[in-house]
Length: 201
Image (cartoon, rainbow, N blue to C red; front, side, top):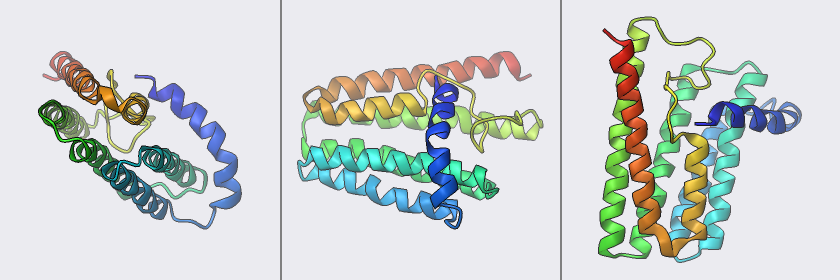
């Protein structure tokens, strides 16, 4: 919901680093390298090492924020780069909740993670299908923040970082956090359906 504002602040902080140290690094390589700490975070969760888990998670988010800045500053933006970045983000977004359920198997954890993953699927369809239609109509905005047109909603990148960080800080409340996020993600999907209803003929 606040991704535009947060992205501006993130870019302002990372631009000097990207300019000075990453002129020779392909942005796609940064996206691929970012996947490693993301998966290590999931592995740490399974082992019960939440301290390591949150550290790897935050490193994943830092690298994920860096690849786009490097691409923009050094003129290396590409559709494939945006596609790869988003795809690998979802790998991590899926791996971490599943890791929590593996680490703490219970009915509450299992059913709420199913609800969360189902909400992700519905939300993904709500904007990917809409994005395809907007591209077909040549109605996608030129100054959008991501490579794929994604109408704004309650839960975006910034809110996802907050929720996932809370998973590590409040593991006893995982079912409540999973459930709350699932509801908010479904509301986000509903926002996009509402937008489509009013803007597509």
